[in-house]
Length: 144
Image 1 (cartoon, rainbow, N blue to C red):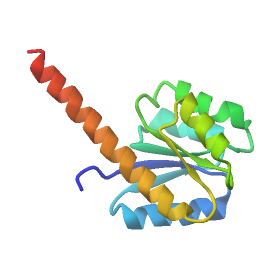
Image 2 (cartoon, rainbow, N blue to C red; image 1 turned 30 degrees about the horizontal axis):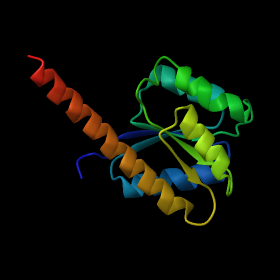
Image 3 (spheres, one colour; image 1 turned 120 degrees about the vertical axis):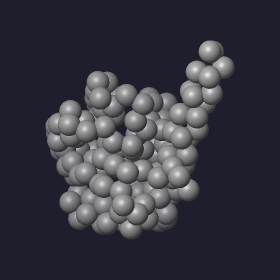
């Protein structure tokens, strides 16, 4: 597949889970870099410095409320068209669906099947981004 992420911003305050997910993502998406942030402030600072292919976002961060976290990243001037996949609390589909309604690309429930669901969501987001890029290129060619 030619639509693999090269840079992922992982925003997760639980350090052990963040390390496990970073290792899983590096193994699955060979050669990708996973930058970790553990607070909203760290995530915003990271976005000031880099433009990731995907943002994986836990909504419950120590320096932000659930209702504010996604909105702050969506409003960040450097998040642009970067897909944000929300890592939703254990079995909290409503929280995940609300995040998608707010502008997230997708959500993944923590719990059974979390790792597989996360890898699938990342792969699908990369394919969608590739297709958006191809569609824009085709539109530019047609407008000549």
